Length: 318
Image 1 (cartoon, helix red, strand yellow):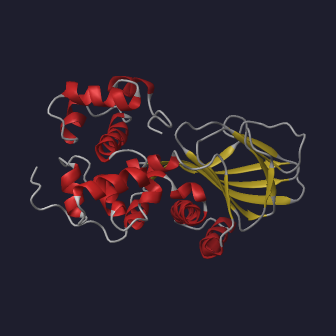
Image 2 (cartoon, one colour):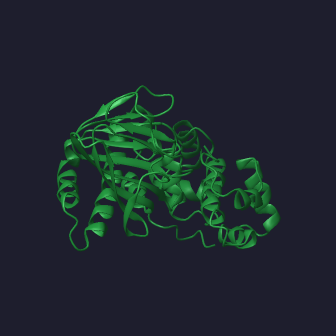
Image 3 (cartoon, helix red, strand yellow):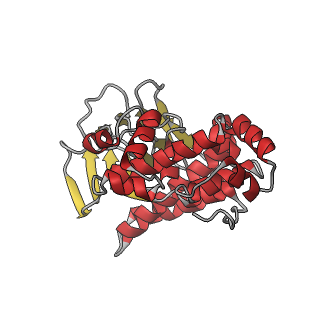
């Protein structure tokens, strides 16, 4: 690959990372609940669960976390797909939401759920979404186990979502799911701007004027035959200064990170089960399937074939 004309680094590396947070919705549902009620949400593998309360209040319990009450204006994310419970009050039996509660399916992936004892009402819009880009699932691995976001920047989107949820008009399912996706991205953006954990590793490095642009280049063109020298030249730094600053900010040497990111991309390709390992190897610039497989096992600890057989492996690359 020609290294004489390296691509121009993005002016906003953090914005470029957010641009790649494309979601593949696994399932969305609108819940109309009346007290007393309790729901058991199942584990969803590599999905991110979200819950938006559009009317009323509820309690949420995630294993290992203290229960918390959620009010209108708050968006709750369960980023690692853990099973969890929602309830109007403690001590109630929890029927599995998918198996035991009737749903009115508006489309294959959108349902309306009605449940409860006829008392005070609570309305929720919930869903489980996957990211379909390595930036997305690389970022998800760094998110906390539970996120509750109450950011004024989300208010306008929350109001739109609540208005659509009150009465499902023609096309309402599409509007609700798109608004839900926007809310998830807004919540992650809020977390990036406020949580100290977002300032570590490659996420934190994106804020550096030069190393951030180099990281964004690797993310944009993982198959390019990058070297420490070519990345340093692309961001107008000397090789030695760039290598030292990259390791300091990202937490690992340049080429180790390049390889690790290629394996993130590989997981995304392999998890579908549709692309042969040899094709993935060629797409990422490896001259042979054997060389790719060795690199993958060194980084991931398992063979590429085991990823295909086991399906998505949450947190595989940390």
